[in-house]
Image (cartoon, rainbow, N blue to C red):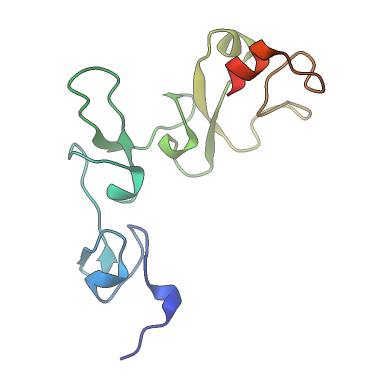
Length: 133
């Protein structure tokens, strides 16, 4: 049976027929499967669907697969958040304290600025570049 080129490199959670179709090279009961919660990981795609690779911030730097975060839980990047959520500042206080949270899509007021943070984004200062990267 021939398999088309778009049925390869499938993410975990996608249906499959053979292990070589999956990024994880693990097709279990017709579904691409990754590492389970608590297992050591290197990157998000190593973990099973609904999990992310939680990066350790202290020695011994043990990254492990963890459940996706839900509404208003603290995060560092959108990959940590459940579906229909994104990682951003929930309030001005969170922005000042550099605390991002998983926010539901469309939860912010109309006109809320995302991305680059600067008083005058048309003429950024050196401090703006240091802060924003």
